Image 1 (cartoon, rainbow, N blue to C red):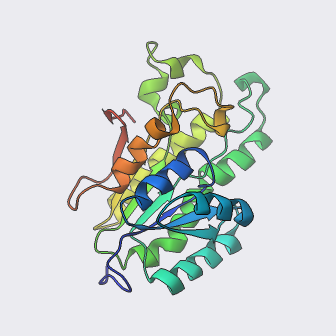
Image 2 (cartoon, one colour; image 1 turned 90 degrees about the vertical axis):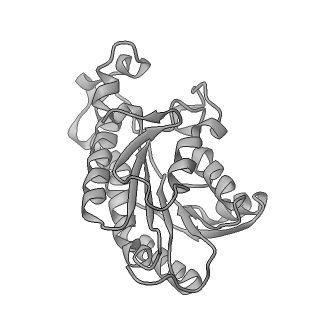
Image 3 (tube, helix red, strand yellow; image 1 turned 180 degrees about the vertical axis):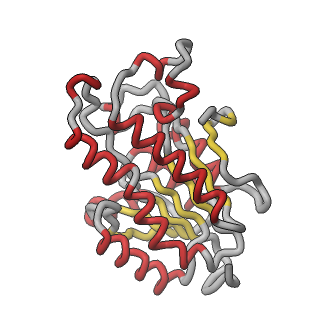
Length: 241
C-alpha cells in the first residue's frame, strides 16, 4: 500500500445505495464526516437521494453488472478523491426465489451476475485506490441465507426457506470474502449479515428497520486499525460460515 493522498477525510463508496440498507449506510457514514460516494444505476434517482442526506455525499453512476460502468466510476473517484478507504459492496438482487424443483440454470445468471460477479468486478477495479489508503476496508453485504450453519439450523427462520439462486450467491460471496481476506495483506475484509430487514429486496416483509439492518455494515466499515480481517458478522456478533 502507498501513502494516503488528496485528503485526510475517510472516503467510502457504497454500491446499490439509492434505497434500503445501502441508503442508510450512506447516511450513517456521511454523519461521521466522511466523503461518501453513493453508487447508483439511476443517476437521477441517486441525485435525489444524495440531496436528502446531510454531509459530503457524491453521486456516482455505477452499475456493478457492467465492466465499463465500474471502470468509469473508478476513474471518477480517482480523479476527485485520489483514493478509497472503504468499499461497501451492497448492491444485490433477490432473483425469483423459486423452489429448487422449478429452478433452471438460466435463473442463476442475473443473480450471480450482480451478487457474486458484481462485488468481484467492483473490488478489482477499486483495488488500486484502496491500495492508497492507510486502512483499506472491504465490506461485502452477504446474508444469513448464505450461511451453511444458519440454514441447517432448524431453530432459525432461514432454514425454512428453500431456494437455490440467492442463497448460493451469498454462500459464494462468503468464500470470495474469505479468499480476499487471506490474499490482501493490510486490508480488513469482511462479510456481514444485515438480518431480515424491511426493504424492497424482500417486498418490505422483514421485521427489522433499515436502521437495524445497516448496523452490521456500518460496524464493519468503521472498525479500528488492526481489527481482525476475514470475519462474518451480524449486529449481534460472529455468524457461522
